[in-house]
Length: 120
Image (cartoon, rainbow, N blue to C red; front, side):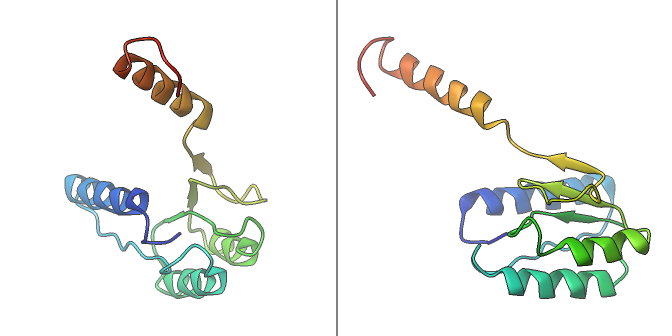
């Protein structure tokens, strides 16, 4: 999506660590901001042109990428969607955060930090 958020920097570090552990080569690419849908699509096209073994993709627009993802499918390149899905069954899997569970964990931690009483 975009590199301005700490979340994506952490995702990149994790991907690079896993690549090292599994002895695979990766590239980690994305536009500067999450508003650059056209830039992301250009980057996806360039990635497809390199004929990768697989693509992990966090769509900025749930519909705009479908033609390129169809191209990946037609070329036998598996796509794993993460963080946000697309309006298609092309990705073989979607990896995302359970936001309700994450919010509950955050609330539990805040309650612990304030001694179980108070207002947040």
